[in-house]
Structure formats: C-alpha cells, structure tokens
Length: 276
Image 1 (cartoon, rainbow, N blue to C red):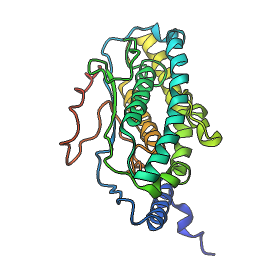
Image 2: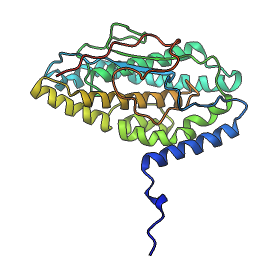
Image 3: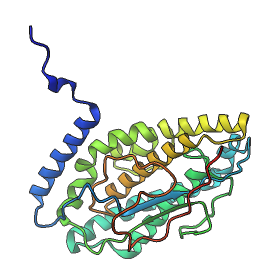
Image 4: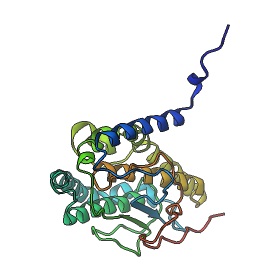
C-alpha cells in the first residue's frame, strides 16, 4: 500500500510562505498599475525597531512596572483612538491623492514610537528600567527607538484591501505573538493597545530569571525583540503607512538586520553588551 502523499508533510512555515505568495500574486494582479513589487530579498523594511538591553537591571522593579506604566496606558488609550480616526482620514487621502498626509503620518509614527517605548520598559521586553518619556518625538538617548520611512507615494488600490485581506496571514501570527489585545481591532474595526501572548510570557520568564540570578537571558531577549519587530511591521502595514508587505521572517536581536542599501536609514543603536 502506498503511503500518503508527500505533500501532506509540508511544514507549516512553508505553507504560510506559499499562502503569502498566493495572496501577493492575486493582489498585484488586481492593482497592477498602482503597486510596486515586494522583493523578499530586501532586508531593509521601512519600519525600523531597535532596543538596547541595559546591562544592569533591577531584580525586582519589573514586579511593579504594571503600576508605574498606568499613566502611559491612559494616555495611549486616547492616542490610539486618535490613531484610528486619523487612519481613516489617511485612507481617504491615499485613495484620492495617492499620498499619506505628512502631518497624520508623523503623528501615527509617534503613537507607535510611544507604544514601543512603554512596551520595551514593561512587559513586552523588560529591557530597561529607564521610565519612558511622555512624547511622540524620537528620543535618541532612550534605549528603545522606532521609526518609519515616509512613503512618497502609496498605491490607491492596496489601501482598500491590504489592511483587511492581505494582512490576514500575519494577523494569525501576531495573535500568537502578542495575544488578543493587539489584534482586537482586526475583528472589531477598531485599534487597540495591550499585551499578552508569547511575547509577554517570555518577558515574564526573563523577569523571573532576573529576580533570582540578576541576569536577563540573552536568547530570550533576542527572540522577544524579533517578535515585537514582526508585530510592529504588521501594524505599520495594516495602518497604511507602507506598501511593502511584511516579511515572514523573525529578525531577532536588538538591532535591525543589515541591508544592502542603508543610505536612507539612520544609524542604529550599538549592540547591547553580552551578558555572561
């Protein structure tokens, strides 16, 4: 008797990649005139997320950070509401003009930047004990940074389908990484901020290790940063801030992966010191 078709043994990652390719081909066929081709070999994604792990972290401060970040959570609730409303305005502008209004773009990048700083301080990484600033602006002296390259033009057609159709495979992965809080808006036409999922679980495991040993396991840190980077790339894409499809790739570590052409990128943080 013959065994089952070998195709049944295709790995889940390969299946996801094939699904990505199918979605991209159909989408580009539908809006061929408006969109530019995504190149999987280009490692320089428009969203840049970085985080420098502090070499000396408090053993027990992470136990009360949930309380310390409450003022930020309140502010971010209003910021994400504004993010949602302004994203709808940007959608109309893109469909009409093919451009993302620069003022709205800068504000929304600021919301992502603020969110990443708070997450890096708290339970998305526990990578620093420095309290995050209350600002939308970039703070080069803060160990967590985020930026998005402004697109000179965007596809009118992609703006109508990428946030609800093309990003669907990524939403499944983001739900695993970040839990339900990040993805609540995908099901309820709203935008939200929160935590949970594998990211927070591993950060808490690192916190326990920090409590008893005084050291943050570097392998956990690199993995957590890679998952955060994946999540924020998807949020930027679904938020219409780029037409470049997020890669199905876990770029681990505190710095962005090297790119062939990095002329338009700002200088990244220096790598975090290895902890023995």
